[in-house]
Each structure stands twice: as structure tokens, then as C-alpha cells.
Amino acid sequence: MAFGEFAERFVRDYLPSRNLKPTTTENYRYLLGRHLLPFADAPLAELEARPELLDAYIALKSDAGLSPKTIQNHLLLLNVMFRRAIVWRLIRTNPVASIDRPRMEQPEMSVLSEAEIARLSVAYEELVGEAAEGERAWWLLAKAIVVTALGTALRRGELIGLRWRSVNLLDGKIEVREAFVRGQSRRRRAERRGASSSSARARWASSTSSGAGPRIGATMTSSSATRRRERRSTRASSRSAN
Image 1: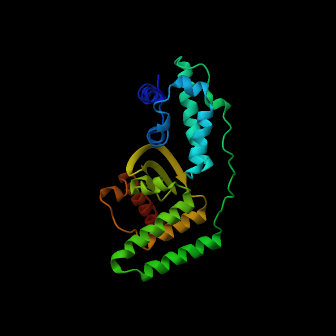
Image 2: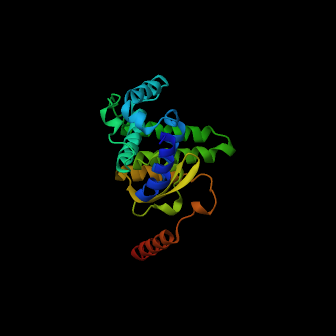
Image 3: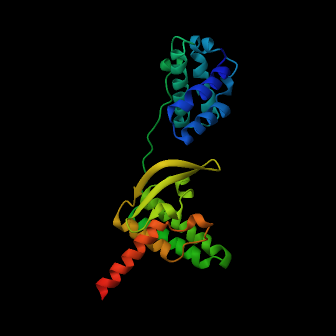
């Protein structure tokens, strides 16, 4: 059986039963269609007998400028596929098991200090002040996205897919329901993210109080549950003041 035919069976008969995240399945399909095509016509038995073909693939992708982490992801997918091929009695051994993986150097993490975050906020305020009337709302939205990212560590696709119905300002919580991946909105398992600190929540509230940016349809409105909590909180505050 050729690798390409096996890949079709792997996607059709194996992936749907694994209960994987939609983004994971989409990424597998992308890797197979975009990068692993050189193996399409190669018989599985030949790939098993000649692991040097995988070494050549690693060298080819390295010369093309792919990072060691990206190549590692390719090998992880191939490893899963060849393990399944063994279960299906198509091959006897996994050729990926004997391959030397590309060396990965852990990059030093760069974290903004409180002072740098403050300067970034001031820079956005200056951009908002200097922007034309038609562009000001978008700069406010950009600032809100950046400050939210700093306070919650949401991924880029999660930030783009964020809607007001997933935000609970009273509890300082955000529920990750959607992610924007490769131009499409993907539903995700509910995952709650809180601001990393009270100061982060304060920065988030400050960034949005000056202007919420353009309203994009009904999805940007607060949920009814949140509105009820807000009304109860307002009534409680009024009673205590009286």
C-alpha cells in the first residue's frame, strides 16, 4: 500500500474516532496535504525498510527554512501514523523510532515588565489621540486586544474569536468558546481564563472604559445572565448607599 492511500484511510477511518480538537484534525490535514506529499507514492514497506528517506525529508525541510519545532511536529504526526500502520498489520516496525530528531533550543522567554506595559498603554493612547475619526475606534479595539492578551495569555486565534457573551467582568473571567484558525471560526471546549492579577483586571477595565471600539453585530452584546448580575449588583449598591 502506498503512503498516500494509507494517509487517506488514516484521515477517514482513524481520526474521527479519536475525539480530537477540530484544530488538531485540521492541522493534521494541513501537514499531510502541504508537506508530506513527497511520500504519497512511496510504498509503506519501502519507508519501513529505508529510514534514510525520513532523514532526507528532515534535511529537505531544514533547507527550506522550517524550524526544528515545526519539523518535530511533522515527525510526531508520522510517528502516530506509522504506529497505526503497525496496528493495522501494514508494517512491522516504526521507521520514525530510529530517526534522530532535530535539536531544539529552548528560546529565552521575554516577559514585559509593569513599566513596559504602562509605556505600551501610553503609546496606544497617543495613537488613539492622533488617529483620524474613522480610525480611532479600531485603535481602541487594538489596545483592548493587546491588554486582554497581556492579562489572560489568550492565544491569537482565541482573542480574535472572543465575544462579549464570553466575558464576565464581575468575576474577572473569560470563557474561551471559539478560536479563529486559518480564516475560520472554530468552536472549542469551554475553558475559563482569569486575569493573571487584580492589576491586570484593572488595566483591562481601564482599556475598555474609554471606548469599546466598533460593535460587530449582536455577538458583541453582553449575555442576558451577565446583564441580570449587573442589574442585581447595581440595585444592591443603591440599597447600601441609602
